[in-house]
Length: 292
Image (cartoon, rainbow, N blue to C red; front, side, top):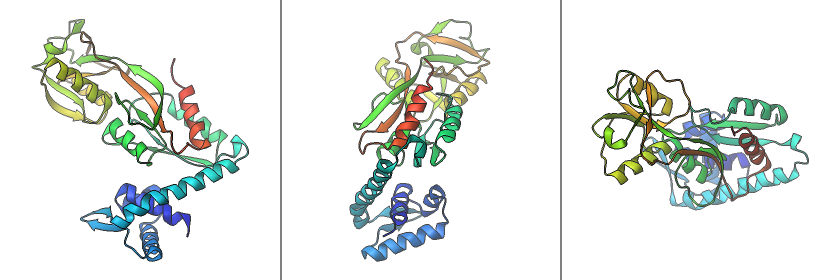
């Protein structure tokens, strides 16, 4: 059995769509469909049921999926062990990132990494549900490395700290609070808020702090990145209470008087199965690039 068929099976299961799986695999949709059909003939079972536009695993597909992943992981490990020198590293590393935050000089890291390891393909991926989605993809094996900013992480992940950012309050330059040096969350209880969507690490931390204080707020706009929150707060759409990432801001910035833990961003990887050398090499380069 060709390993590419197993890779197609695993990818379709992860994406729930032949179309998205084909895009991830850089293959034609017809090729992936034919590969799944070939596997189903080989096993004598259906692997997927179609529910609307989404493909769902059958009971047989659920049973076979972990074994297919194990075969692919074993082959990756064999290739890794057969590599004699770092210059010969090959394979693929899937890295989950934030779209708009410069945690490290990632473009510089990737440029140097490609120069040293031209046989390693690095794929960058994002998640619409922020760090929660990235961690879910990492745990499920859809990613090899991922930025994370969750207050707590599932077991089986190792995290290297990269950056820490304190929460601050961002308001428009003509906002009544703009002249103050600091403000408490209780002072903002009646204000409209701009924030990131549910699932982002900063949103989880702030929601928890507000709940402890018994404050219920009104969120009038949800963004998919923190710099967008700051831009809209500057325009007067609402107040933004997000970590200060150092982006240029045209409004007023106030210190937060409440004790809210900072956003701690790290690089996470699974501890089992053991990451291959290409994954470890890229992880080491990213960690080495963190600002101290």
